[in-house]
Length: 363
Image 1 (tube, rainbow, N blue to C red):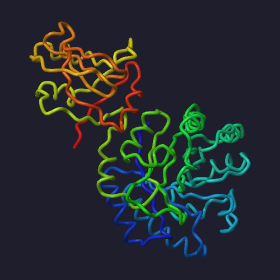
Image 2: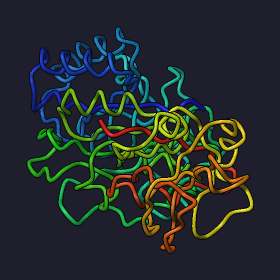
Image 3: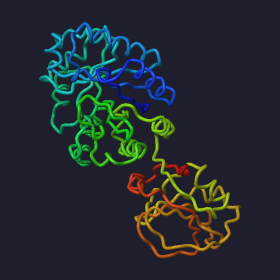
Image 4: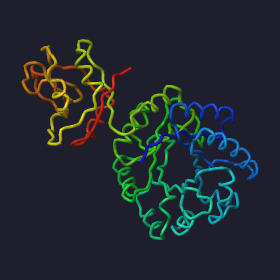
């Protein structure tokens, strides 16, 4: 299942030309999804139709999938029946996200709509909502899951609760999504915007670290920037991420040799399967570079996040790369080559036995 990146737009709070400019830029950096919201729109049905057709048509011309956020109140306000989704189909949407649900049976019936619209469910509740819908024999091919975002500080989901909610969907093979927040965007659906992320712990983290964390859980497929407009640098940064493995940002020391740099940054690493609680060991590289020279340099005490490579005094372990998990004494047989950046230390813990990971130099 290919992981996707997405952006959010809020036409009622912006101008069409700005939204189109943003979508074009996001598409350039590999974004494939668009989230937009009808919950806060307060205009006549005909005006909503006209405005959203314009922006959705443009998004789809860029090859982007568009999901509209709705709720039962929106159905009532626009006089739309759950068994007739033609309004959304005429807009050109690929699907609708149900911020609030119905009774299970209605959602199931929606998944058999004649327009092929995807039905995206709110994932941010640890209840049997999805199971209820599946009990009514829903068409899983048109079911998606997407977490909420939380515009107010300290209201985002706690991590353990997020995991429980996400596991409910993942175990059924449902495609999942969650939100990260831009530190430049100030547009959302409501007048409060302290950032629009799913996890509270993400609110102050760099946007790429938020995304890496969600993917590292292996429970989230698609990542959407909740607020608009993210900066060019943020779009570029997310677009450059490896979507399939943990990629740690590192700062190498100036004295690190060219061979050590090549091992660290140009090789894919696999954590040894019979793990140590003190370090992550990448052992295949020592075989590949066994004939290379690793002159002995001064070393330091081993602390979490520090990276070492075995030097010429380390026998068969020469050339082995290690990322430290717990403090250990100085070992002069290992050259200290650099550090995982501080804000990504917690991501090290997501590298599992036999897990593939990569190191990327800090720019």
